[in-house]
Length: 345
Image (cartoon, one colour):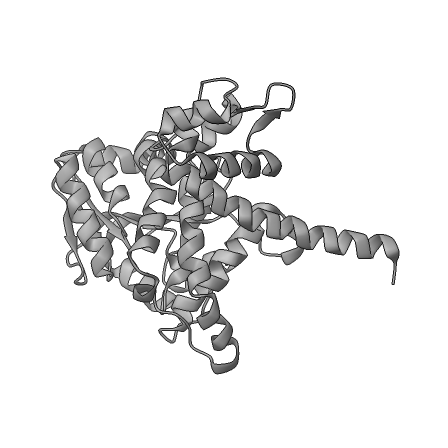
């Protein structure tokens, strides 16, 4: 064996294990408020962090050391202080913003909890159905997407479709298909109060959260777990086509729900069609999400298991086969998402 490649191999193993542990420690940092307590405070001693958080000294001390070792905190050996840099705080101590990353760490426990069942499915087939992931997974998905949906969907993303915006300002009819916790539907209703907005999802936990969120936002959105009726000016499908048990049939149903000239707006994970173009941290994360969530819950229902990294080519193929003649990618900047629009002619 090549000695240098052997060293690189074990370094890779340790780096990945370190990443897994860092994600767990970062989860603790967001849940306990440690990151928020350190944001904008400059260098802090262990005692100062304990005083600001009122958490247990020994746990805080070990967390600070671990986060410094992982590169999340800056450490001064001379002063024995820890600092959360402004650039890192922007992502880890910005709850509710469109750049907060804490939702990704919240996904780690529910995904790894089902890992033994996924391993069994390698031999036995099938998978883990969505409802088996539990409420913490629903919460994690909401946290991952909430800031973007609330702050970018109507103010940035939807502006790529000015004709749709014009129609909604006049009071169009909108359906968010696979709406989850309802953030897209609520954002649309807040931005376009004259529009009639519906949200559809088969998951009861998500529907309960969506109704609570709409009540808290003081907007009226029709959330339901029954198939929607009537025709819509706009149907949105955000981060869900690759999860479906019957993607082509579902897209055909969506095509039938649109008015002539109506628009389907699609958001899918940012992945390339070729594996050689997916050798990067975002795609690697998405393959993990796929194996332990997106793909397996589709296979559990007898679906094709398209997976999180389905890619633009497969997306386009499905949409066109469903009857949409006009599909185009949208020039919207994002590190994690791809955007498409399709019209019903």
